[in-house]
Length: 303
Image 1 (tube, rainbow, N blue to C red):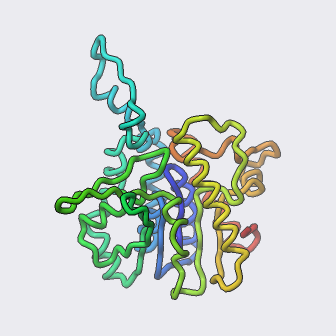
Image 2: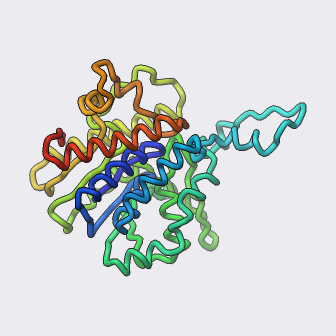
Image 3: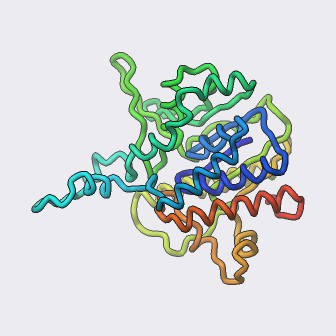
């Protein structure tokens, strides 16, 4: 399986993976980009439903994972009189508070490489080394626990979300970044692997029209990443010689069917990667499960 999702859109992937698991699907090899990599790890370990439960709990709690760094700083300062916080755009490495991401990933971090190896599962995660500008798939089994944690945190970072992961090795400083952009900068992970893959995308395929697109640099870069990712996935499907792909991704037709409204608009209602909204988070977990069930039954569009 390959799971590609940035930020809150990983909630869709969690719902989809859990539904495939309930339908009897299991996976021996996996890959992930963005926060979707964490969903893929849990699914590979037979814990897809646990990933779904965590996202539903996240939704119930108001999606604290997506607290901005500015809001977190204000919270720490409390009601200090005479203090005004303004972000410095030249030094702000990411919009979202990184402590929330570390807590979200923490339960698995100590044992993921050993558990994958013990289960006989192969898993690669996509990261980009910003100093060299090279993106690659990195195997998690066999990695020291602290290195695996760094790689999963780095994979989860994305332009409009958490900032790059700083890694100090001797006298050298490296910056690792991720997101769906890093995954699509690499060759597809199925080279010399299984002939059938489930591809779960948190972003719409084809790309959804976003009429309310803003002018923020973070937002525009993220929009470009998602657009390119959607085009790449569509390209895989039309390319001869690729393995058999079962793609589960949001699309306008399925969204209208799930919402049971003719005027349901995916481009308006589907959350942006960094959006903090508990109601929307719970909704897209359910939407992911609905679409996976539809595709698994053979009655849904597989793009």
